[in-house]
Length: 241
Image 1: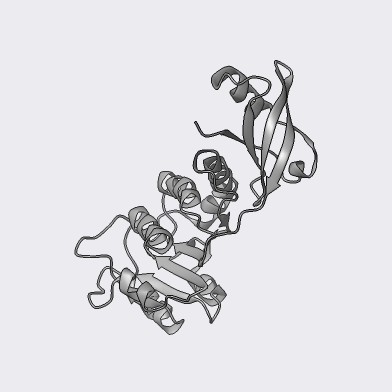
Image 2: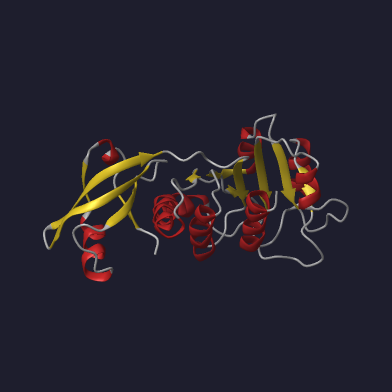
């Protein structure tokens, strides 16, 4: 059985003895029924993980003795996902699943076909980051995606480095698939993926993305939901190369 994982505050793993946050300690004792002497993994959500042993576990809290620390290398290529801003439940699903797929950064954009408003989405930013961090406990990744505040599309497009492989999922593209685009650039060190919102990319957005160097790619004969397309892009980049 794999070791249980717990989140600890950033910087906590610089110490030999680490106090679990109250909610994590309660989960260890009341739900998982762990006990003193059990080994666990501690994650600080910033790329550091530690194998530790529980040295104290009672109603007052839990203390863990760090045995070793690691900073696993992030998978390559660096992956930045730029989805059109989605409704609350869909964005929360992405926050969890993109942690599992080791996406490095998420840059939501607001455009003519996005439903949520910019102010509403900015207020949700902390929740997305919190959900992404919690997902580390299930998947074992060392750090969650960094969620940037939603911005307009020109700002997102201009942020992509010139050396990055820039991909735009577009339902009307019939010549080039996502797999073909990735296969043609096997040495790409960074991939930026643009995915439209529920209503798809507007013609003006497609033109702007092309002008910014984004290559249009298709995902097959069916039209995917916006959140499914984002997950498909991340999965192909991470698992299909």
